[in-house]
Image (cartoon, rainbow, N blue to C red; front, side, top):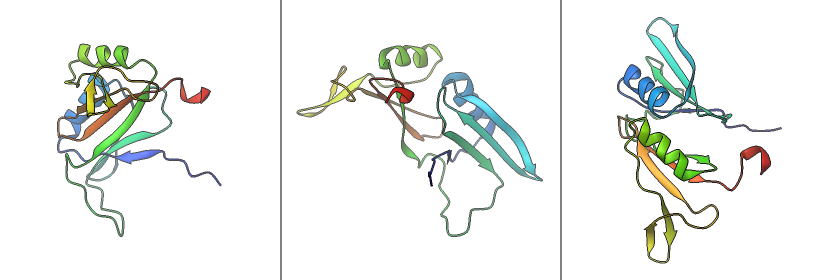
Length: 143
């Protein structure tokens, strides 16, 4: 049996502001924006080429046994691209405050690209949820 990671909840304070950020600035596709029950809204977005989406929820009860995440507490969500410099330019062009490209070197984080699988950049959404972008050597379907 496969266990596929398909949706990650992202805690936000303002659903419309977050939707605008992820769709218009980061370039995620809006899959769903719906009130699924009175007072319960879900916005689901998917990064280009990904099979895993993010979901922002409002008015939904916390699942039994789960803890509530406060907006801005989700850190380290990671997406991969095959050209980190082009991805950085695209994000900057859309108005995202994105870090320089960095790699892990002998002294810790160093500026510039590294070897295969060792080039990263980061950004935050308006609530402070933190994302990492990593350069992959090929598209997921080819790995």
